[in-house]
Length: 279
Image (cartoon, rainbow, N blue to C red):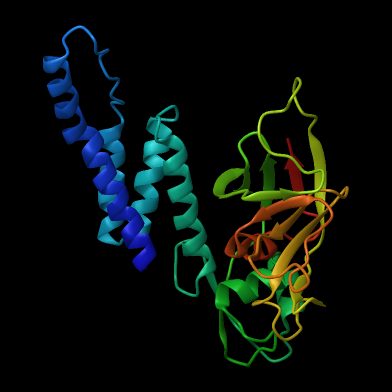
């Protein structure tokens, strides 16, 4: 929360500068050096974006989500659209993936004979998503336990020119994560020639790694492990960027490195055989 608050108020200060202080500075410079200054462009949507930041600063995530979604609907070409999309995605992921009530979640009361695999199949979700939403320390359930759940209807796009991974829920934007590094033949940024071919991939495996050893879902320490999302065809693994020694945290031969929380969330949101488009 401290980091989020700092980001919000830091962003608020920056846009206050753009809206109010910066024009005065430019006016003073024009008076001192007449004819040498070009008129500065001011994005008219900055004031509307500042309203979104102010709502987020209040601390109401539902109102903040609505404000950013409305901003993007009204101003899809704004210079702040990407920042609004990033903030909207972070809010939506937090609302879904934390064990608290939200409009999109339903509640299940565990009954005798219920196990994670059985429940996830019945509810068209995934065991990993149930564990992540409810912060379960173990896949074992207790009779009478309350579980939040949502259907697992997510797909993803690896946008190489924009160096980000975008997640969609039922075809609509859900969240996005920046690609921080690449490994092997994986590349980000504009293609050197023409348009890079589109690759239609699927999630093949979702292992974890702890102290250099593979950890599978259901095993102790899986949620806290270093995650991968392995795609087929090979060469496009989503892996966790880490500052730890390479012998402790392996890297795939080829793939895209993301922040630890990003890959952990992707591992929960995406099921095996879910579609991932690479462009």
